[in-house]
Length: 333
Image 1 (tube, one colour):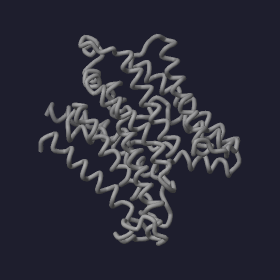
Image 2 (cartoon, rainbow, N blue to C red):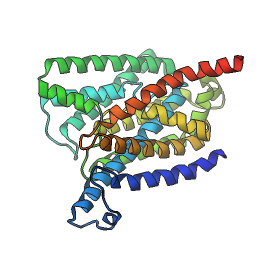
Image 3 (cartoon, one colour):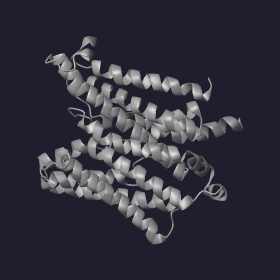
Image 4 (tube, rainbow, N blue to C red):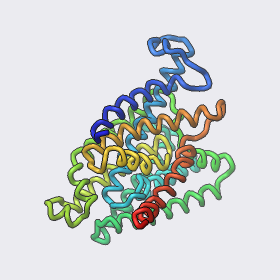
């Protein structure tokens, strides 16, 4: 099948997943609930107020995380780079832990106090990583990656300290938030995340040529007229801010940004002109499917979607590590 032929398949499949997922659950919903928007019928309220907004949030978050993973893998030329490589998730988790520990309950612009604290933590992590690269006057992929790993471990240690010194209730709330989840009511959450994901997508669409060249190498990109340092800094700041918003709303949902770009790269090729739309569509549909399975597999108990994606991501990560060796062995044989 031709590379571009996958894009309409991804588009149709993504729309079908978002439309069908709200009808699946421990309480089956009939199709006519789709046409009863203002009805007081319980099925219509479950569909329009709970399940459809949740599916939309899952799609927006999955698309953003997958696109971020694609961008970071191109920037770092590292197949194992993820949206959380630079410490954004750990910074947001630290902010959320602070919000829970201090009992911040005031809402701001429709966001809960914990979500606001998580966003502040994500911005703090981004600022530290950017500041470290500026301090060393080196925007190379290795420097940014090492700074991100250091920030990630630092904030993770602080989270453990907060959990250890907190009571049982606060510790459980922090642990539950770190697991990630999409339990929202209404369309406010997806509408808050959508502008940031859209802005990140527009930026990446404008830089697909630069991402193609950065994937080959920074020296070649510079020789073709790419302002490597400025491009990497801009992509890093915008994409990290997009991830920070998603994490502040949904919590850290891991491995979406690792698995989806690789799966799409196998199907549509490495050209980011095709890879970006494919990754967005596939990533959104992927997280919707994962969330649907997570909330129905053990019904009426709901499994946090972050746990389910991690269960999938662990074996995928190992496969990714072992695949080059296996290919090399096959070629040698």
